[in-house]
Length: 345
Image 1 (cartoon, rainbow, N blue to C red):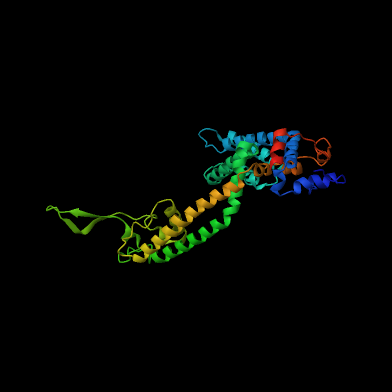
Image 2: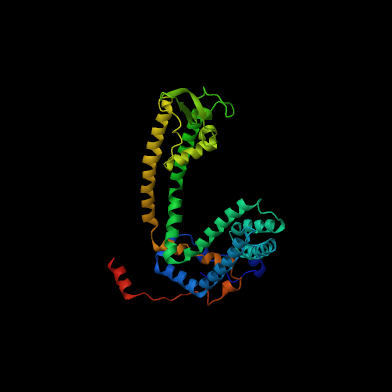
């Protein structure tokens, strides 16, 4: 767990720090042993908790400034917003000096610079809305170092790694059905009012008939509801893919078509419902339960510690050679009842 004694201070500080056996360890089996847990706890108590608290506090201040700066002009005037964006730029650059995943701060800093230099806010509100969401998620990730939260983060990350190939299979099938429905239900022309085309939006929209004085319904249509972009979601491929996603959320985009007029559409809908909605979704839930049982252990939580990141990117090179923080030997105690349980096994 110690670092090489021979090092170049400026090379490690500005180019690439040297690694230790601890920072190179990627196997969770280490954290299943008492030795691995003792190393983690020692590092965390000696310096990790203090550096982590400082990083978190600095991020909270940065998040507060950026969030306040993104509020509309009716609360903060132009000058106050510029000051808040300027402070966001300063704090963002401080984070960039240390943050290994610099993209988490690089884009917000660029956005703050852009907002600081322009006056209107209508050009960047979409970007700010996404960035605020990402920064809020980044704030949530700080809780992963607490065991009560960290175990769940370990489960989420571990399960996602195990089922990514299965999700890819579902995605390909989803693309295939979206392609099939797009070819089958695409209108001949989106702009012509061709009522002979069963897929034309004007043919799919609601029609209203007048009731005569003798209480009979007139054969000719009196009013036709003007179609919109949602009348036929299969008019282009992206909307067709979105329609397939809506089908998974129990929203049917095929209700505008009559089952008698398009039997192939009904067959495809039944196959899609069985294969994706019934079979694969239930199989997906089962795989989730199996993956959760595998990753639901404390060792996975310990592996999520950010000690490696703190050591390599927040400590100075000479600090990584302090014997008080990186000793050659660590002594720890174990309760008698735990030793008895191990011997019984």
